[in-house]
Amino acid sequence: AMIEGSSSALSRERQPLAMIEGSSSALSMQMAREQLEEVPSATKKSIIEGLCLKAVFARAMLCPDECPFAAEVQGRFCHFRCVQRHECGLVGTDPNKTIPDERDWTCRTCQVPGCDECVHSRPGEDGTERCKVCMTGYQLKNGTCKMRLQWIRQSAIAIILGVCFFALGWYISIWGKPVVNQAGVNYGDYCRTQAMVQHHGPPDVRQDLYPLFSTNLLKTNVAGPGTMCLFRFQFAIICWAAVLLVVWLGFAVFVSPDLLTVGSADAATPQMFCAVISWGHQRQLDLLWTKVAWLIFAYVFSFVGALIYAVRQTVLFAHVDAGEVS
View 1: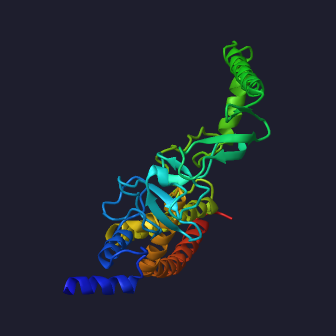
View 2: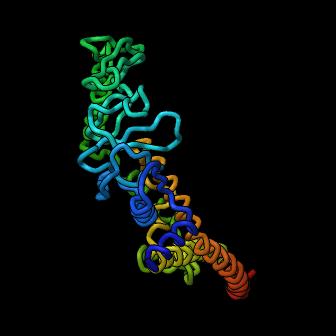
View 3: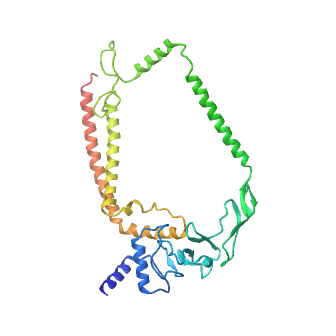
């Protein structure tokens, strides 16, 4: 009794998302616990018994096997009933959604690809669908819509492939031709090398290029203090973003992984859409303190880091500039 009383108090405090009309308090409590603890899933079926024909607000799971199709209740926002195949459009559900879809396990409207005016079966019938009027560019054939002028798309693909093969062949032919002006090639390579940043030294002595992978542009002066300050700025931005990301991931690991999914969960059906919004709203309120804590840390870290960065940049520029002859 004490456990049941505390569970009821918890349900009242958190405003459970499951609202079942005409059901017992035990069933409502089970559904509330499922809604609050489970992430909305389009593949996991509910194991709670007695859900058939009950109007449930924002179900978080698929309907049980005895009544596997979720039908939207007519005139009630985000309420769904678990019904059998022949009950789509009946028992107070939307009469326009009579098609039992075994892919999403919902009762949906008529959806023929390319159709402008679709005709569905009446409630309680076999759940067939056919098109009456197709969209522009499609032609009606046995209740379905077939795309017209397929040869245009196929011809366009063939032309594009032909151009690509021609360009590839032209490049290979150019690449395979012999060199007829080696002196010009050597001079061009020399000019390109001279334009590169090289080690400091006497102008009459050949200089070597800086190593590509071992040169630290944060500390090595290759082109003046401005270049060093630029790369230090980029390094500071990367470190700043990495620290904020690590702190946020730490909240996700040690507090709740829902921080990584709230607001990004996918929903393919009206039932899952309602469930994701309801679950996300509740989890957002529960985890609001983590966002506030992260924002406080981000502000303090950014402010202190900007001061340290400004001082170090000023010291670096003054030190390098003092060693140059001007």
